Structure formats: structure tokens, C-alpha cells
Image (tube, rainbow over all chains, first blue to last red; front, side):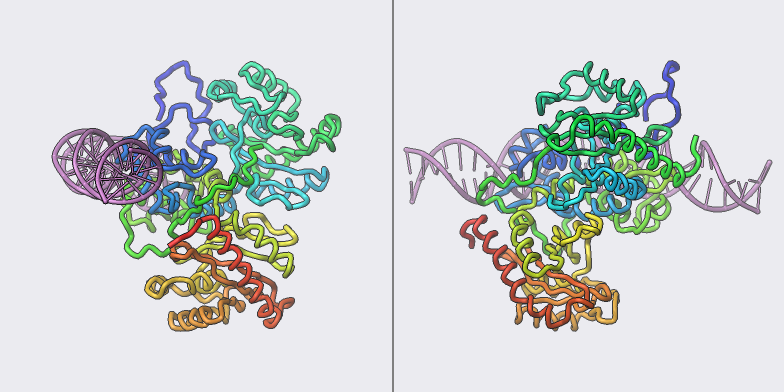
Length: 280
Length: 280
DNA sequence: AATTGAGTTCCAAATAACGGAACATCAATT
DNA sequence: AATTGATGTTCCGTTATTTGGAACTCAATT
């Protein structure tokens, strides 16, 4: 736990409840943390990694890393290919299926996402902020030609997605600054914001208007409008968005949906409040 | 958006062999194993659990369990609700998305599943054996009215699903007996097999015919025909199936698809072999 | 105010992880 | 076939972490 002796710290209330905000002072999670860090290395790679590849990224001695990997494999969290390459194990699918099905936020939001999709005819996304990433919890789109997991569970950068920017706009200033300072900007398209200042300025606008836009900042030809969703104490922060291809959705059409998206976000928050009971 | 649809750029011998067989002599995985066991308790429950509920199932002292839970929460594998209830954390979604997208078996099988769906018009499932459960890796169905995660990642019993029984039929005798002896049979419908002998007998038939059937054994009104898929050394065992409602699919119609399902399984195995290269 | 139940913290003892180095395995090369 | 180098695996004394009983806090209830 962080020290609370700092007299100048204006901590609103205690923050130990399912916190999705960026961890400012990482608490030690011992052996488990180290193992999960290894898992994360493998999960963050684009293709299966060999022992030596992981070794280079893990800053652990050979023997130690080897045991950690063995344990992860034994537990089914990793799988070891015949060519000694490690990839993420299918046991995680089982856990994730539960995480998804049991997620209250997602369940509450679902009907609202459908409604928004019916009104716009375009793809609707629901995401939450986790650390400096957005994790997509759900999506609704007309033709399910695309693969199912294509978005759900995917982690995307906060600074160039509608949901990400919307979520950030709901953060208290201190946390927003902390988060922004940890971002390592990468240019995806010509429009990608690549500086802290530009991002902070845009978030100020989002706070005013209540809507975030992704103007082909992550993927060329893809536009989106989003609105933030948050719990009253901001311990939980996410967003909802409508996405469409630039050739079909003009900037004006996108703006015409802004109100709808805000309303959807509002309805979801209302339902959350109702389900979660009265709150400080 | 990160397009990770398929990173299989003609990479030979990269097939993962992830041992999915029932672990006969559980190797000790130390601290990690204990933590994951706790995670599994939470993931196996139907609703969020309180500290005391978990304590009752975990056979660990209070202090120890508390620290384990705290670590899991800190790592984002569990999430702690404001009412002190634990549920599976969304961080697992990120891992699972990778596990799914990067799964070679699934990628190889995908076009064949689509083809089978086109031929039958009914829902097609792909699953693998993991311990004494089947985990569904993919499904193809016409109308995506159902929720996405509805099957993918779901763990179902081996003894009353088509894919499960098909997978078992590919196991060597010794492993099959080991597995069967660990099953705790539960009656889901009137047709559910509930004894080891009945199951073993049915698997003998499956080995002869090459097809497994689920005759409303898991869910009333749901029938399915399946065929096994396995690596040459049986380190990997799974199955493919076609499922339909009993009112529409007669037992005869089901049998008429048996050959198609076997062919699909065969094509998938061929592709796996081609990717794996020559093999012992 | 006292009691109960639930969750959290503490710390000496017990246990598991660490990590350097030796060993094994395999592919390419001579 | 023998050598080399790269890669993966095992071993074991040392070190650091987990363990688990007990004491503590807090809130709700009697």
C-alpha cells in the first residue's frame, strides 16, 4: 500500500476496488508476478518465441526462466511446440470465457450496444481502460464475416482509439497526467497523435464536448466516435464507440451520431448505478 | 487496429504440439500452481465468490489465501468488486485473444470448418481435449444471433459431447483408461452415459466407425456428429463436429453427414502434417 | 455495549525459488 | 565421423519467499 503520510495528497477516497487505472506504484506480487511477466512477454510477441528470445527480454537467469516457463507450460498457460517455441496456452481461453460471461459491465451494456447498432447500422465497440491499454469487451456488427475474437480481448493503444481517448477524458487530472507520461507514442497513420501535449489538448476538447473521435488515427480508412463510461469514483473507466469506414462515413455523419453515442454511454452508466446500488 | 488475423506467413514446422493429454502424474508447479488453482476455483464458480466461499474450497489458511488473492487481483487476473466478491479479471481476455489468434491448429482448421458448414448448413465446432474437458476453439454458424463467446473457450465434459468422445477415441488405450477413471459422471439428460463401461464400449464403436455421436446426451434437443483429429504421436487430440436441433435433424440426416465430418477431420490432419513436415 | 462474522495484517518457522555452472542435445561445418 | 557452436536442460547449496497460526480491525447485529 502507498504511504498516506503525505499531508498534501488529496486522495478522494480509497482505491482498492477493482481498479482498472494505471498502477502508479506497482505493488510486489512475488513469484506470481514474475511468472505472469513471463507470460506477458510471450503474449505480447507477434509469433511464438524460443527460449533464448524470452531470455533476452526477461532479465532472469537461465535456470530460473527455464523453471518459470516449465511451470507455465505445466499449468497450461503456455504451450511448448515441438520446435521449442512457446505460445499462449488454450487454458487461458477457459478462464477468459468466464471473465467475459461473468463481466457485469459487459452484461449491463449489451442491450444498449445493440440499440446503438440498430440506430446507426455500424459497428459498435465497448472497451475498458487497463493500464495504458484499451481492452475491448464486446462488439456488435451486422455481418459476422470477421473472426469472432477479432476485437474482443484485443488490447489497443489508448492514445489513438476513440474508446481510449474517451476513457482518458474521464480520468482525474493527476491520473491522466501519470498515464500520459507513460505512453510511448507510435505513429500508425498520418493523423496519429504523437506528443503528450497534442493528446492532452485533445482530451480537454473531449471533456468539453463529451465525445472522442478517432479520425483515421489508428488505421487508415477507419473512423469512429466514442463517449466515456465511468463509475462515480472513477475506479472504473471505459467507453463505447461507433466505427465505420471513411469511404462510407463522412466526418459529418460521424458527428451526427455523437449525441446517440453519449446517450448510450449515459444509459449504461444509469444501469450500472442502479445495479450497483447507491454510492458516495 | 492491430491486424493479427493471421501471422502464419508460410512458416513451416511451427505447429504447436502443446500436450493436451490428461496429466497422469501431476508435476509440482510450486507457488504458481497454487495461485492458478485459486484462480480456477473462482473461474469454475457460477457467480462471484466471497473470501469465505473461496476459503472453504481452497484448503489453505486464511492468511495465505488472502495474499494469493491479493496478488491475483494486483496482477489483473482476478477483480475484486466493491462488495468484496472476486471474479475473473479482464486481463485474461488479452491473453486469451492471443492464445486464440496464435493457435496454429485453429488457423489451419478454419477454412475446413467453413467448408463443412457450407455443405451442411448447420453449426460446426472445433475443440481440443484438455485434461478431462473439451475446450472449444472455434465455431461457425450462419446466424450470429448468439453471443460470441457462447462456445469458444467454453469447457464441456468429454463424456457427453461429440467432440469429446471423438477425441477420446484417438487416445492410446492406457491414456484412455486413465482419463475415463478420473471422470465424475453427471447426468445431463436421459441419454447421458453415466458409467465407465458404457463410455468405453461406445468409444470402441467410435474407433470402428470413425464417428462419434451426441444423441441429446448433453442438452435435450441437441444432436451432433463428430470425428477425431489428432497428431501422429497423439500428443494432440481434438475433434470437429456438426451440431443441430433434434426437431430439424433426424438421426438419419446426422448419419448422412458422418462421412463429410470424417473427411473434414482428415483434411485438417493433412494440413497439419504438411505444416509439420515429415514426422516420426 | 457486547457479540458475531468477515476481512486484513503480522512475523518466526518452514519451504520454495534462485542462479551459477555443469551437462545434454542437436545442427551445421570440417 | 569428428568438431564446433548454439540451444536447451538439470543440479544443488544459498538465499529469499511463502506459509499459517494468531491477533487485530471493522461493520453489522443482538
